[in-house]
View 1 (spheres, rainbow, N blue to C red):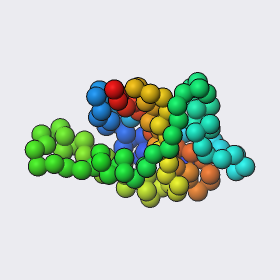
View 2 (tube, helix red, strand yellow):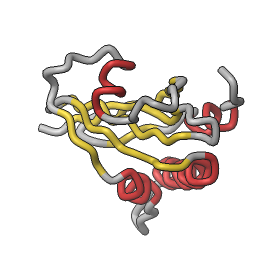
View 3 (cartoon, rainbow, N blue to C red):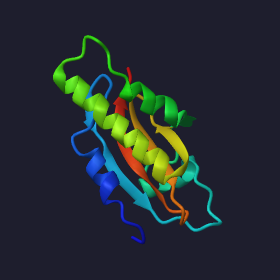
Length: 132
């Protein structure tokens, strides 16, 4: 790995993506040659996911903002999660350009939010969203 992603890996620790089930966020990194396009096919291939799975792009900033929102009724753990997502959002926006969200699958959807760093490499996180 040519870049140091320790800060990103640390920001992911303990964060859960909340849907019908809560799943942890996992760090992802891929070296990407300049001529290769970051798209659904690239992500599916690097996660070894079936090419027949339904894929679509989502709005990375909307996903991050929804996770950062603090509601008045939140318990302490909910606030802690939202503050952790705020830190993660800020870090991703500082370190990466072209943040993209890929949704792959149905019901148990692989969410992959990644961006490209200054060297053109891809990093971010993956998780699962359960949507029935």
